[in-house]
Length: 198
Length: 201
Ligand SMILES: [Zn+2]
Image (cartoon, rainbow over all chains, first blue to last red; front, side, top):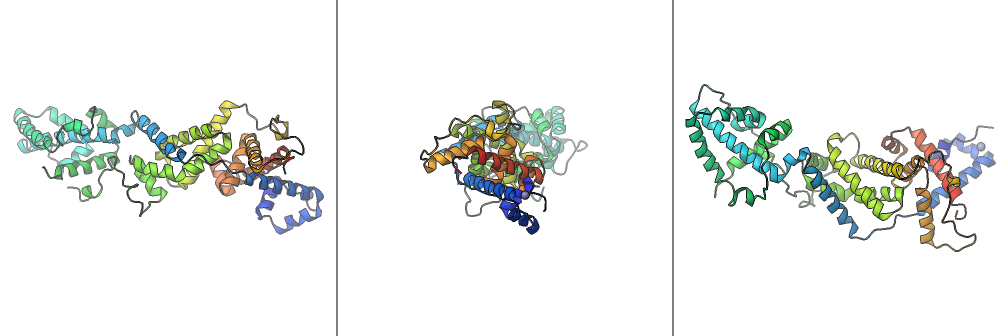
């Protein structure tokens, strides 16, 4: 007589995937036949038990609860930098840096002159910041004019109109950005620069 | 200028996913968008998988409010761990794994380790009097209670295999064990259910 079925073979049996020679054993073994019946009955009982359907209002509440918890965690996590109220002012500040860097470029041809200011800023924001700190008076004047110009691109009400309640520390922001995020910021900067002024 | 700079606008909290139901994105695309910070894309994933996640959790704890809490925990953990989802598995399999871990953590916090305890040794407070008439709803409730009383590993294997149409291999991937171990756990779960539900089946 062939050996009795192992536990996993009983599962294969009820799944219908047990090899024919092993299935043949069940027909000749009262113990295995009885166990097979028990397993089938238990499976049928298990499958008959539905999860009670919750109220239709429950499902949207799942989304709401998850969104609230995600927003709370985002306020302290790295994704804080990717939220609208942080990214927009960060882009705005980067525009300021761009303006000053461009001004520096215009008056100091011997200094660093990136061919693509947006991308350069996006890739090396900390470096551009240090350039800003050493900008000459003349360059600063020009830069301030450009900043004023760029600031007019903001909607009426400035940061408040954008729902911005706090400005991030740009050094921290720059250090926290990954290469991918810098690319995204560069794209955002470009769209901001190309936005028609009203 | 970057040639592709204008072709990839930042999501900025827009809701492109919910506004474009006529071209539903697959889970992988939604995960990509969510990783980029698009919470609207993640919301679509929640909508898509909330029912199956809730049902796994409900089977574990047999209690609506607890299952709702566990469902929320599952999705929040998924959001935080999205960066570790590399698309090597289906999102549904991945979210099941998180749900199971969340549920098992809850179970281990609430109850002593019971894997070694045989099912028929667990005190039964809901067993009906012999011969008592049991309606379908009551019978289903007893089966759910019996499933909840199974040792965690047996419960996990039975729930995923029986109620969520996952293959033994998928269940093994989710719980981090072998196919043979999953089948053995399913068998012992069913054998214990049979003993537990003797008056019913
Ligand atoms: Zn046998």
